[in-house]
Length: 276
Image 1 (cartoon, helix red, strand yellow):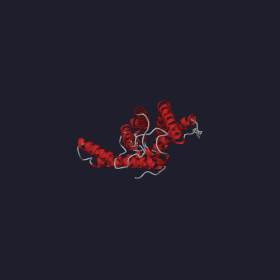
Image 2 (cartoon, helix red, strand yellow):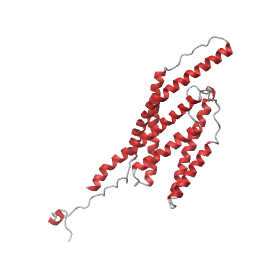
Image 3 (cartoon, helix red, strand yellow):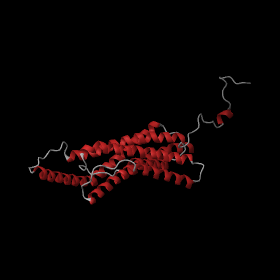
Image 4 (cartoon, rainbow, N blue to C red):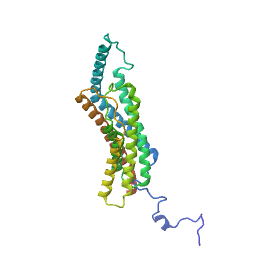
């Protein structure tokens, strides 16, 4: 006989354990896009701030030296050609304003990178939601560093300010953007090769991915060379390029630590709920 809705529950039903209305999600079963965007913005802002302060303290003195050297060469060239006094043009922004603008620009760039990184992370997370956030964040940041920072810098190393012809700025920017696009698409191809060889042994997958990355790097040398000479001392040029690359390394290290750390922190309440 079926009990009516008004029938009181039996004593056994009061003591019997209830099945939960819905099961607790696994630690990595769901990761909302908004939460990932928040992680990306936090990681990007802190990474950009770290890179900006690093550049301000270490790279900016080299930039000042490069600017003074370029001004001295320009003045000597004009005096030699015209045989007259050189007219000094006042800068539109002072160096202190440029220093502050450098930090702000890197923070804004970090925020933009954080948004794009979070979207890409969410797309891959939907394919494999059980992956642990820390190693995935490290792998993603390593791939992003190669695609956005390392590979383009190997093809077109950073140039100190004031070096190069102003008429070729557009061409140089277009070549750098092309290098970034090729590198990003190349990293996506590396990931596809690694995923599609899932049935193979791990060394085979790793070697295939490394060979694909090497092919992408070789493809960058099909782009035209930098058209401008670098009339600065080799020591100054080397130091500037190494500090520029180091600032990118610092940004991605901070980014990976913050993004992966927030992901680990998000696991704690879920792990506690599963234990309960």
